[in-house]
Image 1 (cartoon, rainbow, N blue to C red):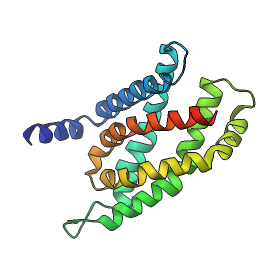
Image 2: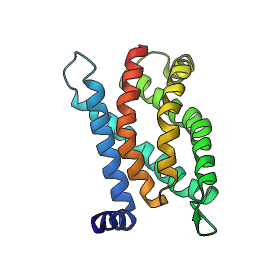
Image 3: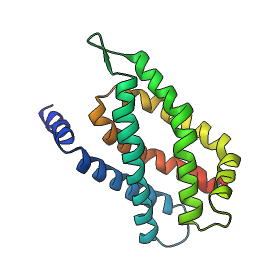
Image 4: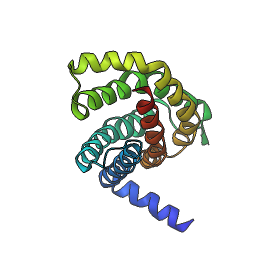
Length: 182
């Protein structure tokens, strides 16, 4: 228990370093797992590029939205007790607004335009997302609705690290689904 408290305090004292470290690990592990689904050799440039993307997501969504905005809009503690109602509201906001309208459009634009260099630019990437969205969103909801109850009932300063840890498994699932859809 003392180690967990020390780790929590380290995250609280060093939020930017812990966000960066968690994001880079999520990107490296997640993309390396995804690359195992291909017969091509492991591509370190692709992995580094994906690590850059996950770092951007970690700061824009995980840190700012989940740890800052959601902590204000859906406080963890209400009247001295954990608010499961607010955790549920944060979960709905994430799965019905943030993920489908921010994360996935950014993911598809990044993947199609920057990583895969597909023609048509961002507009084509968004059409690609629209075509894939029924499968992607149902997969996302099956995974993140239960996972987010853990995330949103945790102290806000731990959310980035939790999302990164749980998100590493999700990235592997997402990569498999994306690979399967192609």
